[in-house]
Image (cartoon, rainbow, N blue to C red; front, side, top):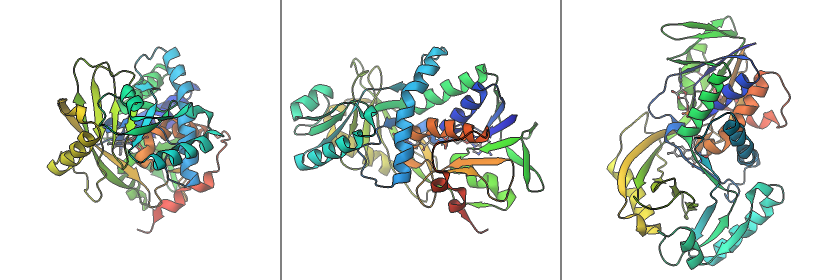
Amino acid sequence: NRFIVIGAGILGASTAYHLAKTGAEVTVIDRKDKGQATDAAAGIVCPWISQRRNKAWYQLAKGGARFYPNLIQELENEGESNTGYARVGAISIHTDSKKLIEMEKRARKRREDAPEIGEIQLLSPSETKALFPLIADGYSSVHVSGAARVDGRALRNALLRSAERHGANIVHGDAELVLNGMKVIGAKTTDESFVGDTIIVTAGAWGSQLLKPLGVHFQVDFQKGQILHMNLKGLETDHWPVVMPPGSQYIVPFQKGKIVAGATHEKNTGFDLRVTAGSIQEILTQSLQFAPGLSNAEMIETRIGFRPFTPEFLPVLGPLPGYEGVLIANGLGASGLTMGPYLGFLLAKLALKEDIDIDLEAYSISGALGSM
Ligand code: FAD
């Protein structure tokens, strides 16, 4: 069986790895677009305390978080020392203790069928500061020990390297689908053509462009995210937890003083790769309010990524209706680093015609198809 994966963000990279591991013949074609969501994303894996109630979303997010430890172990066993993943825990901070008590309850309820949440603890302002010294005074928190941070870029690279070790062919290029009637039989770049039995399209925010020549209106839209990378030299930040303040912003510490803060959620921007003054102001205002200790941090870079969304804000996964030989997954939105590795594993199983234990109906591609 020959497989072609178009798009190598976290989703395509995981799909390719899981396919290649079985000994299948795999070609990955990626254009390395600037604005690849995976490349900009850093990286909270903590779906359990979200207030989002959609069951279909939660099933994938929970499954995604659960999937990580084994995958990381497997990659490490294969010699990958930099997977970008660390289970450092997270603190959800607030000044309103009622809100924290509700959050703690929610987390305890969810732990009943998600033991990977780990320990859940209400922390006082001084206990919170002991875990994350840069925090403003007066913030208590709920600490969740099973949460993790992940550097999307590092994990994508580790998956692609491992796929390559298992024989995958990784090609840099702009792919188009090749059709024979209503069957997709391959893909081509400007230089080369590839024949495949199943073509898997994991093209993120660019997914609709790729399907347009088929007369298919795939309604994948995207939100631009700007995210700041800072450095606090000399601080041992390796084991600091992820910080989730009220609102949509967060602060993610990495090794050797690196702190990532963001991100914006910008609609209707088109593929605009500019770093903009208003967005930087928004990120800095919020992060310095919650963590004034960041004011002396060195500004390193701002990354831009386009988070792919479907109209229902739910991932879609499965065969493209009306066509043979093509599988699609997309719409991972703001939680794609959490779900991506797991969804890639499921997608590989689908491609191999193996059973999967989730109800695909909830993530049907038809829901994201419009008329041309
Ligand atoms: P992408 O990573 O965008 O990859 C798509 C790839 O397809 C690209 O490389 C592109 O070049 C390629 N491609 C497209 N068309 C073609 C073609 N015709 N030929 C060849 N290649 C093609 N998620 C979390 O879980 N936790 C977080 O904390 C988090 N933070 C985030 C912060 C930011 C700023 C952003 C932007 C996202 C964040 N996310 C987070 C979301 C997550 O990053 C995305 O949902 C996920 O990376 C989407 O992955 P993907 O593989 O579907 O798409």
